[in-house]
Amino acid sequence: MKIKQISVFLENRRGRLYEVCSLLGENNVNIRALTIAETESFGVLRVVVDKTDEAVRAMELNNFTANVTEVVAVEVTDEPGGLANVLKVIAEGNLNIEYMYGFVEKHGDKALLVFRFENADRAVEVLTKNGIKIVGGQDVKGL
Amino acid sequence: MIWKEAFECAGRDELAGLQGKRLGELVSYIYDNCKVYRAKLDTAGVKPEQIKSVDDIKKLPFTTKEDMRDNYPYGLFSADQNQVREIHVSSGTTGNPTLVGYTKEDIALWSDVMARCLCCAGAEPGDTVQVAYGYGLFTGGLGVHYGALEMGLRIIPASSGQTARQLKIMQDFAPRIIACTPSYALYMAEEAKEMGIDTRNGNWKIGVFGAEPWSESMRVEIEDVWNMLATDIYGLSEIIGPGVAQECTYKEGLHIFSDVFYPEIIDPQTGEEMPEGRDGELVITTLTKRAIPLIRYRTRDIVCINYGKCQCGRTSPRISKIKGRTDDMIVVRGINVFPSQIEHVLLGIEQTHPHYQIVVDRKAHKLDEVEVLVEVDQKMFSDEIRKLEELRGKIKKEIESVLSIGVKVTLVEPKTIERSMGKAKRVVDKRSV
Figure (cartoon, rainbow over the protein chains, first blue to last red):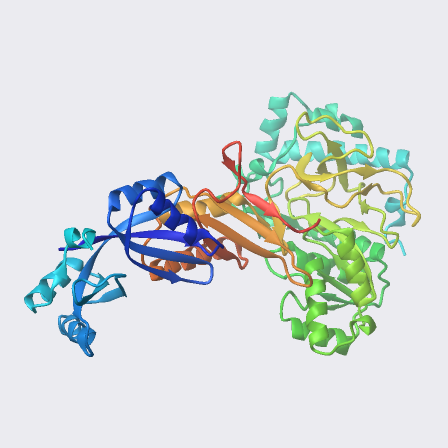
């Protein structure tokens, strides 16, 4: 139930994000979720897209350093305390979150968040056991 | 004053006679005492008795940095180690550093040539000199120290760094002479201004600046801000350290003490002698050294030479400021930096061969800065910022420990480092020198 995320190394240069996004557009790749982490001199763009393989190939052809990581897309009830409920399970399950961010679109009436866990397989196990819904690759494509 | 007038102002023929005699003795001495050199001379088919005049030097083979490295540590020594009184070590390109040694006679020679340098720059016995070159394995500090001792100066062995203290020393003990790298002189000026010190009324009146390349515009700046005479000194540890050549107060080239360090300017490709005034590689033979004398050592520094008599009265030939290098070595704050050193670090860290570039810059009134750009490849990349920062930190730390100099490491995207003929350009030197 894990989904694939593409991470791209970006220098802090004007127009660089535009270049990578327009490359995805040209290749008919649609962005489902996106976040950027940055330092003083560089950033890492993380995206979940509908066509991961095509996206990675296009990036490599265009000299971007990109890799694919497995992340977990978790449904969160869109109400006060919704995220806290999920985080409680994560904390009690002793799962380590490296980072997280939100999807652009809702999944039905639920919010959808991307979690990068230290150990994705164990996270899936713990979350599922606690009745938290995880969204798979097919669902992401259909968003 | 001229410290060794007999040598520094000798006529050219008189000097050639002395150089020829010394060269003959040197070759005999080395041939008898250094197996490596003996083999080298035998291979070249030269016997000591064939060296009758200084022009016979062309029969002798060159000595290179590789010879020093290949015969590390003691292979090129002609003296026994029990005759050696001091050793100095400079960082090497890869693997072995360069080791040099001095017998008691060599220390006396070093003291003598450095005294000539200080005199040449305008020092008078009784002056005080602040030595702000590093003391230690680097030859800069001790070399100037010995010369100052020889000519009877009062020495403040401040060594490098601790700028506030350097400035206090300058104010409290009134040293008329400062010896340090030229970029440090400008850096100190900036610090001094911030501390409210009137630099134009400072005590330093003569600067003996070297250990890194610097431009005429930098000289103008230093002379203006400190209201002093800024002179250039040249040297390299393989030959003796500082003390090989020095500008006089006329600042029209650096007087090379050719009675002891015989200079030739050659075409680095063919090894043929270049005509006077034309640029070429400086080759030096240490005519009188004992511990590790070198025959026709290729400095890899590009200069031109002028044999004309100087207005100061010295006849010793003058070399120009260093115009470039025949290899890719760069000198930063007195430290020799070779791109291959950085290559080794990167190879060791990631087991990959990333493209990199070294950018050296000298911002106004600042010390030289080194930035190492490293292209991030697939193997090094992580989606986690923390891991990338850790990698960057590790590269920085290891480069710094190899170079003994602070660097900035920047991770850049693949294919962003300029390539020519498919090969990445390793060094970008933005300093205007």
